[in-house]
Image 1 (cartoon, rainbow, N blue to C red):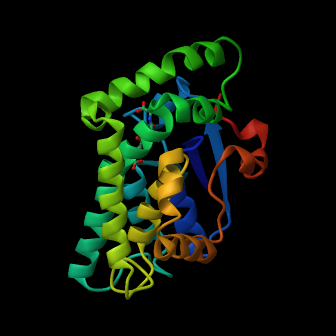
Image 2: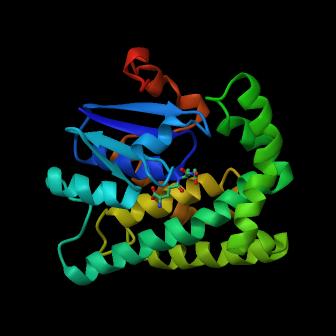
Length: 249
Ligand SMILES: N[C@@H](CCC(=O)N[C@@H](CS)C(=O)NCC(=O)O)C(=O)O
């Protein structure tokens, strides 16, 4: 049994769950943590989630987790066979995780009009004082992160130009292809799709995406193939299956 330890609304969770589904592995459970939960440090030295637990081992970082799952369950690989194609998958995944991630963080949580709608969704697992406290400090905390990264210092007009350029690039990759690399479903599709899916929680991006039918069709293909709803507040029924006793003490 694989246990996925996660925070609500994280795009990184999606890569793992979709990889498991693509590989036909349904024997897993998910444990959601409230933000700021001290137990996280015990299973993830960086304090970041997701992290998985398998046969007594804890593996952190969604990229390492997917490569670990590839080694443990090589069937239905999410990597293409050729080394140069694997390299492209890595580059696209890293672009999604290290660039698109900060756009989605800033635009859906840092911009006040989007944050008002999305920050409460991030706090579904927090209660009492922590819920009150986090709802006060999270908006500025997120801005502190995105400002130090740089994207948070850009004006909204520039953010829209940047995101359009990113959408244009993916649109070009999809002009004559069903998938981003080697015309074959891979980790690159899951990683980029997860970030676009989060980005569309920002109203500006939702509007822009409607002008990219190739991208929206591709996102539907990724979802259909991996048969996994995005982990969102509405989809919490999945994690409600987790036995309360299984939660770490
Ligand atoms: N590179 C990591 C990123 C994970 C990550 O940044 N997770 C965020 C949630 S989306 C987190 O745990 N943030 C809490 C923190 O930084 O303390 C991965 O791919 O798993």
